[in-house]
Amino acid sequence: MKMATDKIQRTLAMIKPDAMNRAAEIEKVIQQEGFTIVERRRTRLSRPEAEEFYAEHRGKPFYESLVQYMSSGEVLAFILAGDDAITHWRSVLGPTKVSQARQQAPDSIRARFGDPNNDSHNAAHGSDSVTSAQREIKFFFPDLTLEAGLTGEGAKEYLSHAVSPTLVRALTELCKVRPDDPIVWLADWLLVNNPNKPAPSH
Image 1 (cartoon, rainbow, N blue to C red):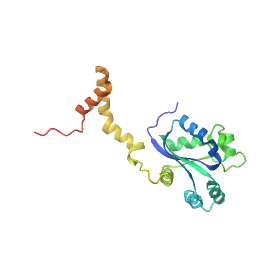
Image 2 (cartoon, one colour; image 1 turned 30 degrees about the vertical axis):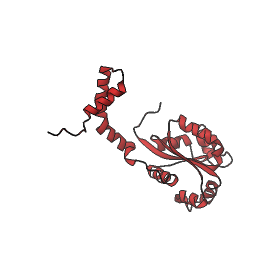
Image 3 (cartoon, rainbow, N blue to C red; image 1 turned 135 degrees about the vertical axis):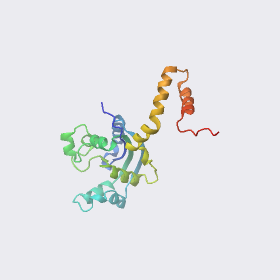
Image 4 (tube, one colour; image 1 turned 90 degrees about the vertical axis):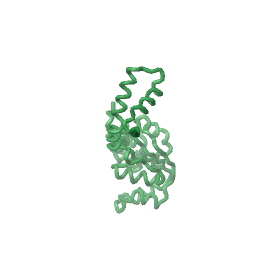
């Protein structure tokens, strides 16, 4: 069983043009792996957009064919959220080259859905770092405001200081009382015992 790491992250996943006919199967893998799909967008990248997305590879020998390939048909971009999502999604993808993926990780997405005759047509993409994920999510979802403070360590910190102590007291009390409508009871208890409520004025 995968251990929860308390590091809820967001990452960009993208199904590339050659694997769009297998999109439903790849999406099923995403869900089976426990990711939450926060947002999705189907689009076709223009050549300038593909150049911008892969700008870090400009000047490398494969850059030109990569840009052509990525602007050759529709893609499907997802924002995935989950524990340690960036590393988890990259391990689900498998090695970058299809031939390597087929040898080293035969159950991976690139081994199953990549083009066996073309190493670089590897079915899907995943951000390789937190910085890349932020940039790539913004590239595909420019209008989406993601609350940066409530991911990963920030969320853990906030919950452990602001919410957990009160909630633990509330749930302990709830188990002792065992009311008929636990949700209403819990809501009332939290209102009365909210440590942040203003002190009554005298």
